[in-house]
Image 1 (cartoon, rainbow, N blue to C red):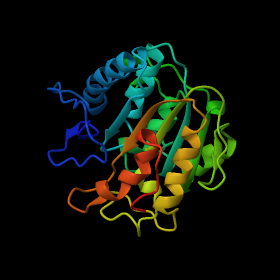
Image 2: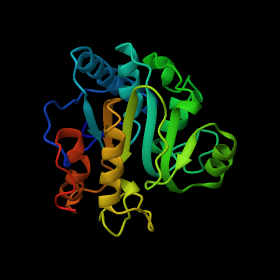
Image 3: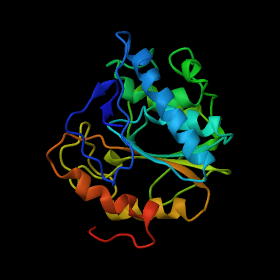
Image 4: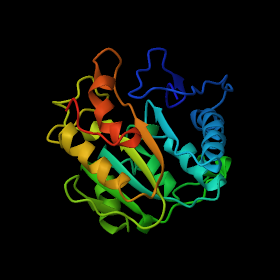
Length: 246
């Protein structure tokens, strides 16, 4: 998915070998409506892959594509829990975000906030907060911190994973990695875990045998070599050997 929100990225750098690329002619409408068209196709593609026994890996330029992935899992009859690696919370709503940045909202939308924004357009059912683990999230805005204080979402560090029950959608925003190790990030956050620690944690989630789909948010500017740097982080998704190059 070579997009950041509804904007096509002509120089998208993916950290995986790509089997299929989704690009569409989008309608001249609002951002969420345009993204709903994209994510409906993502959902159908994911549902088909899961129904055929595959574990799809979807990479894009931001985290909102997760809405299409989870909708696709549900279309395939899977009600996933979520393990979400991110330097940020992504739990803003259109009412709490001062910047209005849509990429800061997907996890909150996934657990049922403002379904009229996009979930209703995708037929996306809310994932219960109790079935979500938010990993790291060291850089929170005050409204996000306030929400998470009372939410049933589990929070943990990369070194101390607490995993939900049931089939898992594993989502990794690569900016969870310390910005000193990953140049060119759109929203760099210092004092984070190393690439090696994130790779180890990803493998721990995969070792449950319950991961049904993986999302990778490539939240960086092109031309900094970030895709090559994070390839080993996703290596456990495809191979038994991990950590090489870290």
